[in-house]
Length: 208
Image (cartoon, rainbow, N blue to C red; front, top):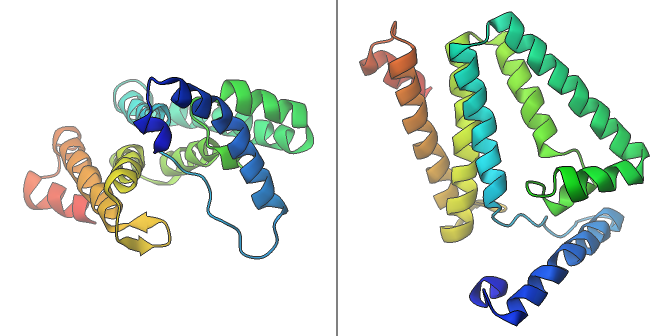
């Protein structure tokens, strides 16, 4: 917050320069601590939020217009194997870990992911499972909830989150998640699932 207040001034430039090594030291301390640990650093990261949305919405758009289920599964399965291979390599190779976190994933990673599985890996695996086991429109709706709901909750919760719902989760962030996801899913089902009547079919599916 202090860095934002000083934006454009020399002090802000210096604060931003030392932020990264400080976060790395903080996360190393969390890993070494036993028992109850302090909270993870999860500031607002707009490039990450944008990447999150584009990854999900773009995947749904391709699945709806270009890819068949089999081709989508082939692509997602390949990406899942690549992600698992990278995560395995990061565990055994500090050099690879630094390469991935300091260069490849730098704009969209969080400090704690240096010592844990990257959230993007769980994202890819989640998309793969959705396409594998759910009908096309159900998978698309689920992916869109993840694509927009999570970034909306993060942005609103960090900016206006006061009263906590559970741990670091706020009531305002939860409300943003529900509203953003519901609007997007209802619009998606209305236009891409013509077999569903807007009311009550699409609305009911959205609420479920």
